[in-house]
Image 1: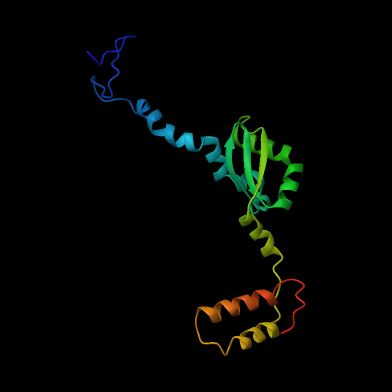
Image 2: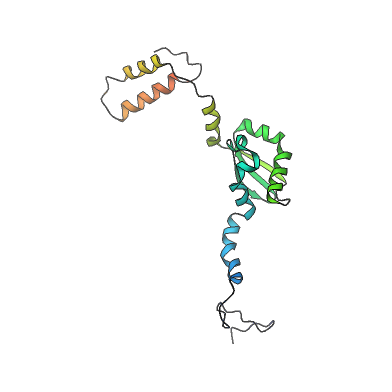
Length: 167
């Protein structure tokens, strides 16, 4: 009698012998692996990040994980300093959105992909004469990867801020 339970006569076998099992009995086994990887609160913060912190902050930050009350946020260095000053307000917004005291601290991680929006906002405008000079300099080379790479390098050099190189 390997299937008998000792507390209350319920069987411990995987199959429910008295008919169909209620869906609620199956849900923990299905959801436990997903919640182990990412909690429901983390999923809610990830989904609603722009609504929680606003579009300006959401454009340069990304929530990464929520563990033991500490929310890890990926951002660029200058934004991390600003968010440290706003930490109390950000935590209050997150907890108000979630409806309970879930986040108690913020951690910041610098990531290179978060620097792209900052760099794009100060992208230099290239001088058309310099771009034409770059194209003329590689014009004698045969078509191919080398010519494309050298042209790309030349364009990058002449569009860098404070570029003192002449064509």
